[in-house]
Length: 409
Image 1 (cartoon, rainbow, N blue to C red):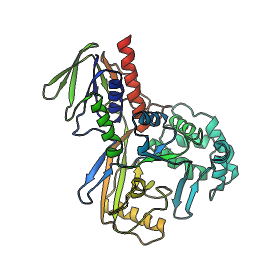
Image 2: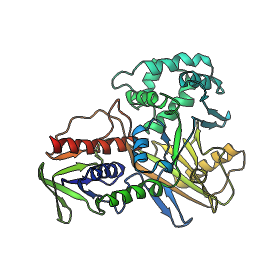
Image 3: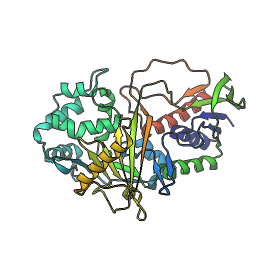
Image 4: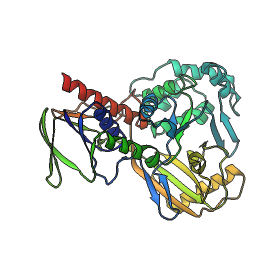
């Protein structure tokens, strides 16, 4: 039985280890942190006695690898999917409105019609939308430049494309890679099944990481927490891994899924608010336009919470936190305006900043890999999808496939 070492216990590493163990390989999974999950994790708040995610996660129907793999792992029911796209939006001037293509019509008909129905939009935007779906960006072009070259109306960019760019790329249109964003648009709006949102029914640790860790254990994967591998010796078929304490492990082949921290990255700031008042957003998720918060989540509603404090959250893409008190007050003011009530006062709040939340889409120079080491934590490249749960699953599955090819070569 081939013995494989997987370095990195985030979602990509878990995915890779499970795929290898399913194919009767002997797998060691090494994680430097005290818990599995990497950036896909939850934290316990002792004040409220609840678990909450480091940042709320939205899924899109185009995450085919994620959907298929979680279904194969028996976790499909852990995600709530919209039956059809409903993207609620809010700004202070226009109030609430939503992008909701009619599922009874083909998406290429219903999406332009839904856009034209939005306040401040009309049918004159349809040629611009067609140009975006037909014409590919130039190599190295930024989203802003591409939109201007395609003569995209300001309203279309403001209400749809900029929020999507921030959410998908974690980078503003002025610097985000247009070729990858164009790929996101084509994937997201390929069909009604793709053009819908989903979210986990419980915090990520409970809904995703713990079930996957349990599955890995049942498949015989040996998990080594608090174990940082410092160097790897040997060649394919005869590898030795050494941690910082000098402990050694043998393997025929090594997969590295821990990310390269040398690439350019952007933070994501999440503001978690717990209220004693029964404050509920009109929808489970709302996109904010010209607001401090880019996305607002009714986390209690998403997870089915019925007792205790009401949990709302806001996410600010590509931003490190300002002074905590000021940031919390701004978000509370926006929630109050959204609900047409005085600015609510939270019973408790947490501001979480993942300073290296996502590696940005950038051109990469080829690197020389150690013989017998498969890199699976590569940063996203132009034209590919940005750093998301979908990319982690794709990388994990892809690494497991490369292991099998190398061993059978």
